[in-house]
Length: 216
Image (cartoon, rainbow, N blue to C red):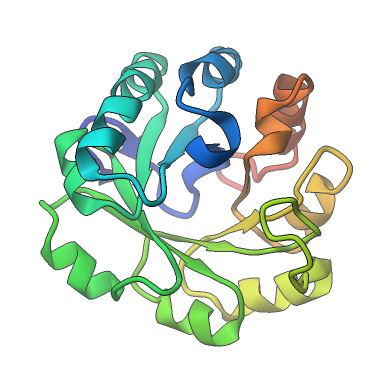
């Protein structure tokens, strides 16, 4: 196993079958509220995203979420901010597509902290080689990137075949299309609104049921 700061991360499916992106811009600073029922229902991973905040604010916002994730046995990942990730003793760091290379990030981290990266096309998928996972987006239309070109299941499948790290589908994923993402060969899915909405637990169950089984 790849070992983070206390939570085991599974090779091949490092974030399990589903990752809740707890985005401050979308959800506000109370992230434990939407995360708690998901964690109780078996959410395997949560990613804190607080873009543009100072590291001290990311730590302040994320400490309760980290504790809740740890109590539930879920992986806790911080988006972009290495200093905040270290201060929060996160299990992993996720790097935007325009961020530094994976090797440069690993050089700044203690052994055992997982590193993920975002990608939107084949060139960025290639740059993600060496990461523990890669988020590929946007697969479907999403409020987070209004008007952005979408990949769709076929292009997603092509990028999964090209990628070296396990791929997680992101962007407009919901209970209606999660099975299509699974059919494209992803290791799992990541989402904000589908998890944070009133049907979040139902979506989580659909995501986990559509994920590869142990030993498959």
